[in-house]
Image (cartoon, rainbow, N blue to C red; front, side, top):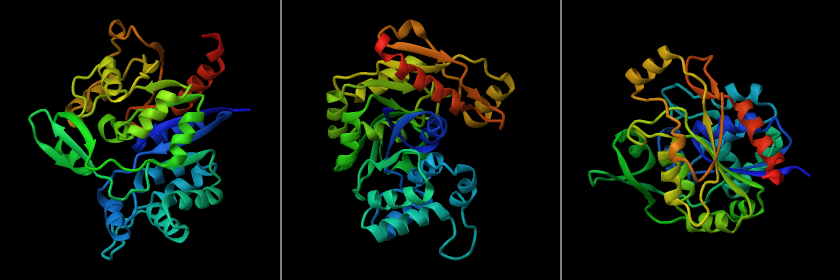
Length: 318
């Protein structure tokens, strides 16, 4: 029987990890944050009273066995003068499925058969009133995920305006897991939104699974300026309960100096330094993790899949 891996996250980080992990013999469940409220997703939330679909769409594409054929179609964004302007095909498809089946979870299950998914996709909540809030270090309060992202201000804390009811399927998946993975991605707006729900933290604490974090390669303006690897771990641990991160996956590959300079000057992003001297309480897995053929720093999805599988196979030896 395959080992059960539960991955929590959102955005491109989660979908990148899943693209590689699905290639290996593991039972995957992706729990996706649903607090996005910008662009196409925000308009659909308001019009159809549903949870955010943007990150769910990316995950569905990533986990589909026919990803290469679906990617271009489901991620296609209309550019027109009608009401379709700015909407993606996948967002509209998810909205239709949710309306037909009664909620987003049932809509996803219906589409899973059509898209031939390798694993399960579970929205964190079905609560459309879910609103992410942030307090900045200078005391400002920001409402809404897209406003938090666009503010580029140093954040002190994120929380929900009203704590949502968490999906029962998400809680059960965590309780049954052999490994829980916090994916790379925007730490305040993609990862932590899964950890500010008491029900999720309680489930993680009760689960027998180890807790792994795949660290970002570069920092994010406003969210993690000047963060080293230990700062990422410490921040996530501050939102966790009794169970803290037990294993971290970090990049050790030398980064292209020209691309580093481009990131620093154009996007204000710096390489995340692995400060092992400050990571005494966790198991460290370091490897060459960069896939930069497209001119951007991305995690090597296949290599990450190999690392997770090897960790699972060697758990009994630890």
